[in-house]
Image (cartoon, rainbow, N blue to C red):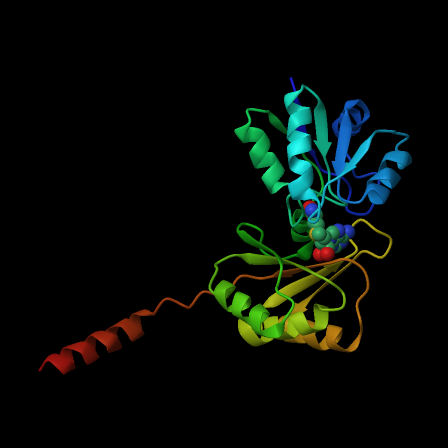
Length: 245
Ligand code: SAM
C-alpha cells in the first residue's frame, strides 16, 4: 500500500535530520521536493541517492494527480521542502489533503522548524504563541495584518527576509508599541545570533545595518491591562451612585 511521508529536513546544519528520516529517504520510491538542487545536496551529504520529483507553487496543480496515481499504485513518497518542516510556509497542504481524501495514509517524520527553533532561543514567553509566517510585503497591508494581531494574547512568530527586516520592525513598533521582541538569525548556522530588545530599539538597529541571512522575529505578548484596584472600584461605584440621585 502507498504511503506519503511528510519529512522534516534541516534548517541550516545538515546534521539536524532524524535517523528515521534518513531511513525513509533511503527506502522511498521518490522524494517530492521544492528545488531538486537543494534536496540533492542534502541527500548527497548523507550518501543517499534517490529519484527526485519537483513540486512547487508553479507545477503543483499539474503534478498532484501524477503523485496521487503513484501513491494509489502502491508507491511510497517522501515529501520534503527546501528547509525545515513541509507545509509550514511551504508547499504540501493540498497534496496531504488529497492523499488523505483518497484513503492513502499520511505519516509524520518530524524534525526542525525555524518557528519552534526560534521560540526556544528567543527568551520570550512560549506558553502561547501565534504563528504568522511571512507578513505582506507592502507597508499598508503589513500594518493592517499587524493591527489584526495586536490583541492576540500570545507571542507572535514572524518569518522575515533580510531586505524587509528594517521596514517590518518599524511597522511592528508603530502598530504593536514598545513590546519586547527578538530577532533570531541564521539558526543552526555559523553566524547564529539572537538579539532581544524592544521593537523601537530593534527597528532603529536594523534600520541602519542591513541584516544578512534567514530571520525569524518573535514578539512578546501585549501587556494585559491592570485589573482595577480596590480604590478605583470604590471611586467608580461612588460615581455611579452619585449619577443616580
Ligand atoms: N518550512 C520551513 C520551516 O519549517 O521553518 C520554513 C520555510 S519558509 C519558506 C523560509 C523562512 O523560514 C525564512 O525566510 C526564514 O524566515 C525562516 N528560516 C528558515 N531557516 C532559518 C534559519 N536557519 N534561521 C532563521 N530563520 C530561518
